[in-house]
Amino acid sequence: MASGREEAAGAVWEGADLDRPISGEDPESESLADARRWIAVYGHLVKLEQELFDLLAHMIPAMPREAQLEAERTNLPLLASQVERFRHRLEFWVKRQDELTNNPRR
Image (cartoon, rainbow, N blue to C red):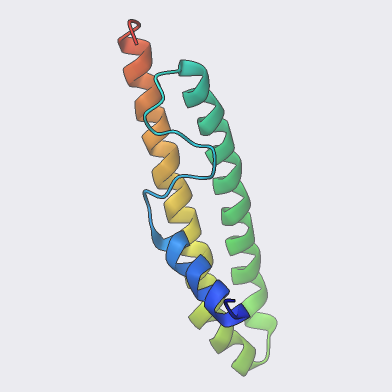
């Protein structure tokens, strides 16, 4: 059984994989409805993670110095990597939607 530390490390590693789909996501889908669905999903996730990042960045200056350093070293990079991943997946689905829209045979 994995320890909490191992699970956290695994989550960070998975979060850094820009191309990792969310459970249930099929990047090979030929459905325009699927593309639209994933655009909405990733749009919400980008917004959530960006707001969390901005909130933390706003809170850090009021923290004790040790907390500031730890948050800057661990929390901010993790949130930034998630924002990047979700933006990357959102861009994928926007391009996929364009492909499906411009090639209606699919």
